[in-house]
Length: 260
Image 1: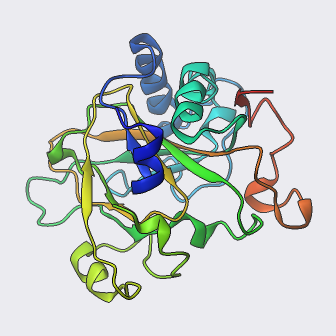
Image 2: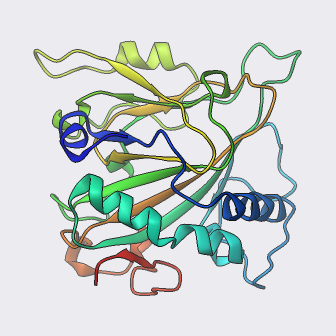
């Protein structure tokens, strides 16, 4: 399991063993089924999302703030073992969730040549609500086994040291083409590393690390939650509560998972 020194050097960490209880992962998986079917057990729908029930199931299913709509997902998002691991890796004295996304990547159909990819990008290019220097990171929790065939995340080692390049696109489909179009800082090289892991394990990445993922060719859906977190050294611009920071003071939606 990656330690703090590796995270600081590489910009990401990968747990080789599950962090979360197996039974909770199973319940959260059932919760994903419910949300995809439009069933909201809490009585509250998730936030407006890229994908809604009834849309094409062969697209990337990306649902915003799913913990609002399902208790098992709510439990997983706020689990103390996840918070403890994030704190150990980053050295943060406080870890708080501020946004969550359900991600279901369908398997490539047998007759299809291409499938769903997530293009190379830096999260910070989409997170302009946060002041410069805010300590932000993402715990990506696997709900299914993520093998090399399942379209795992790839991280570019050390790219968090390049600063914000404002290049790449989450919705890009051709990762090789994108890679060739990204201008690297002088003297830097591109080394991408595959993040495979069992269900219940997680990766953690810095908000400036380039990452993406290829199509899922495992024959089964690849499922995860992207749990965006901040330390106590983070502040929205002008300390406002707008956009992706609008729920920050609601500890039910955005729990503190480690520290005060």
